[in-house]
Image (cartoon, rainbow, N blue to C red; front, side, top):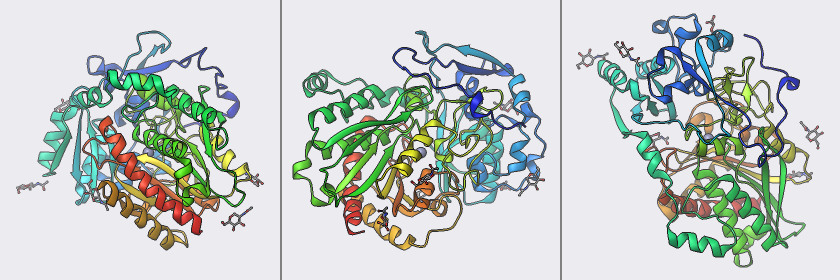
Amino acid sequence: MQRAPSAAAQKSPSWSFAMEPWRTLLVLAVAAAAAATPLIDQLAPGQEWPARSSVGQPGDSTKEEIKVEDVFSGSTNETAVEEVDEEAFAKAVITKEVDLTKDEITKVDYSGAQVWKIQTNKRSVVAVVGRLRRRNLVSTWGGNHTHMDILVKPNAVKNVTRAFKRENITYDVLIEDLQRRIDEENPPLDENELSLQDRRGHKMTWKQYHRLEDIHQFMDYLAKTYPSIISVNSIGKSHEGRDLKVLRISDGKPTNKAVWIDGGIHAREWISPATVTYFINQFAENFDVESDDVKNIDWYILPVVNPDGYEFTHLGDRLWRKNRKPQGTTRVCFGADLNRNFGYRWGGKGSSNNPCSDIYRGSRAFSEPETKAVSDFINNSAVNFTAYLTYHSYGQYILYPWGYDSVVPPDYQQLDIVGKDVARAIQQTGGSEYSVGSSSGLLYPAAGGSDDWAKAKGIKYTYTIELSDTGRYGFILPVSYIEPVARESLAGLRVLAAAVNKA
Ligand SMILES: *[C@@H]1O[C@H](CO)[C@@H](O)[C@H](O)[C@H]1NC(C)=O
Ligand SMILES: *[C@@H]1O[C@H](CO)[C@@H](O)[C@H](O)[C@H]1NC(C)=O
Ligand SMILES: *[C@@H]1O[C@H](CO)[C@@H](O)[C@H](O)[C@H]1NC(C)=O
Ligand SMILES: *[C@@H]1O[C@H](CO)[C@@H](O)[C@H](O)[C@H]1NC(C)=O
Ligand SMILES: *[C@@H]1O[C@H](CO)[C@@H](O)[C@H](O)[C@H]1NC(C)=O
Ligand SMILES: *[C@@H]1O[C@H](CO)[C@@H](O)[C@H](O)[C@H]1NC(C)=O
Ligand SMILES: [Zn+2]
């Protein structure tokens, strides 16, 4: 396979979102044989490792030795991944272009898709799931060393059930009909809320998952309303030209420490921007009465690192994870996983070099404008950050480096102690139990994460926080969870602020 295109070959970002919304055409790759199957399968090339048969990959799946991280990543074997022939893959499908500027935006329909939780205690389980995954019957949602949540595609429920029965694999059905959950997740605000919204000066609530415009307008409103402590700056543009807006809260004391917080690296993790904007609102509206621990910190907060992906989850595919830049030589597939694109040990375990994979690492470290902007800002600013916190979902974990492999940094015991203090505060406030550990140790190795890069830069308290829940709703967390999740997370953040002040 040829390498991904050079920087010059990549389209320059369209500057004005307002003028040219969704200029990029969504290329729907429709598997020829699957013309009559549900839409979820038609979109598969954008999300999934192509089925073995369609790309003629060598290798007999029955003889393979499959590790858990292989199942999460498709494959960690560089050589094997290289042999995916994108051209052949593109020829094996009929491609259809859909213009998202038109009214008829086709939303991916997940009717009949299910989410199951399975125990991965036996090696055979991992091997079976790996095979089903490569046949495009399931995809992985989340998991740890003992459990895995998988999405079972609608037309595959029967066959996967049969395969699991045959192998004596037990499972719990977490979600019976994914589309129904999606439909119920984010209802419109009621009259009462809407009238409150009119009086507040911004549209943001924590009773709904809001579009990017509401989030940005909320940030601008705060900067205008509290100019002595709040400012907003765009640190760059996404591929499609949306602003990467960072809000700074600071009383300007030269002795202040600095903390970076971001959310929404992964598009579908809606609870993350919702939680991070909740922090902003609390600190902004109550700054005078905040604790010294909070006031002695300059907060830099980027609620949506991946605005293109975020908007796409509202308009096109609720389960989109990556950004939206066309990738690879054929550009049939969209998006790099921004949390595999950071430049420390980039390209290692738990990341893929297949542009169609959900964990595609990009053509090189910082190939994506969103990761480049964040890393340039943190690296080049005069600010000396003491903490880097990146909010994801789901699983309820507080994770510290390293992610690239099963090793820990020299000060990991301190990170562990503070992480457990944060977890305790969360538990005492809202009752949710968070597990604390290194990301490779607790979950699985994944190189190119933002946390590894931040830690390697020397930022002491670097954590990836996987918010609620533990799989009952997964990514499709109903809006009624926003306030409880955000409130307990804020309690955890206060504990972190105390540790930062002592650092
Ligand atoms: C990776 O795959 C190639 C080709 O299938 C094989 O020759 C090689 O032994 C594999 N390497 C590892 C570490 O599994
Ligand atoms: C792994 O996931 C399962 C199921 O969600 C959960 O019960 C368990 O506590 C998790 N393990 C750790 C170490 O967090
Ligand atoms: C399910 O299994 C049947 C029988 O083996 C097979 O014909 C069919 O193609 C399978 N369906 C899918 C979606 O793989
Ligand atoms: C599944 O369980 C049945 C009954 O206990 C047993 O006969 C069969 O060999 C098991 N199959 C596998 C693949 O373990
Ligand atoms: C990071 O910052 C340092 C010092 O400010 C600078 O020398 C270096 O070139 C920067 N690295 C990148 C990748 O921008
Ligand atoms: C940044 O902070 C660290 C520890 O808090 C300190 O060791 C380092 O000297 C500081 N660097 C600058 C440029 O202030
Ligand atoms: Zn994530």
